[in-house]
Structure formats: C-alpha cells, structure tokens
Image (cartoon, rainbow, N blue to C red; front, side, top):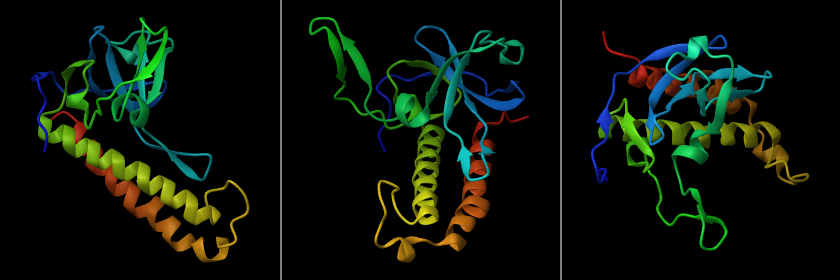
Length: 183
C-alpha cells in the first residue's frame, strides 16, 4: 500500500445533519473548507444515491446551513485523475497523478481518517460504485445504450435484489462504522 507523501493533520470524526440527511465529515481542503459525505439513500425506488461530497454555506455547522455551496461526487472529486486549469495553455488539463484515497489527495489538508482507514474507505467506495453499476446492468439486461441481444441472459433480478438489499447495505454499515466518532 502506498503511504501519503506528507502526513495529513488528523481531525475528529463528526456526524451532522443537513437538510434532513445524515452527513459524515471527511476533512478540510486547502481553502479551509470542510467537506462532507452524505449518507446513502434509496432513491426513486431503484438505485442507491450515495457518494455525494458537499460543502455548505455554514460549513462548520451544516445543520444550520441555508444551502449547499458545492456538490461533487466521490468518484470524480476525491478518487482518480483531476482537472486543473493550466494558465500557460489557457485550458483545463488532466493531471498525471492518480489519487488513490482521501489522504492521498493533494488539496486535502486535514482528514478524519488514518491512512489505513483512508484505504479502507477507498476500497468500500470502489466496491459500492462497481456493485451499483452491476445492479443496473443486471436489472436492465445491458448497458442501456441500445437494445442488447443478450438482455435475457444478462437480466438477473434475484442478483439485483441481493446486491441492493444485502451487499450494498453491508458496505454502508462498514462505511458508517469507519466514519462515526468513537465514544
């Protein structure tokens, strides 16, 4: 496992509520803003809404915020390659560095996780995204670009039910255990 180049400042884990939704503090960025992960929610009767990273107008006390000031996604704002504006070229460029976990992110200055916990969260989040996509494909019988001639073979409602009702809730429980403050 990779370790971070520069150790991040560890801050206390914290759970709050914003707009009637449970949120977990993840850390603070280089601009001094806290950022939060929203708890999972079964949305529209067919998928898990999860992975949303938010900042609030009252970022220290999101329960008193009037609005969300920033809404991004774990798989595009935390993990992976990130865009940056290149002033010399006058355009956005994709960085060559891949961010593997929260504590490895160059714009995160403080975090609630140790490096080991950060790797565990990255694993759980990656599994969530992969399984969510799998449930979609198995439920639709394909990738939903056009009619899939193998749709009848691909469809598996029993596995969709197992992923959504057993596997993903188990992953969410582990994420909850990882992010809740210890007494």
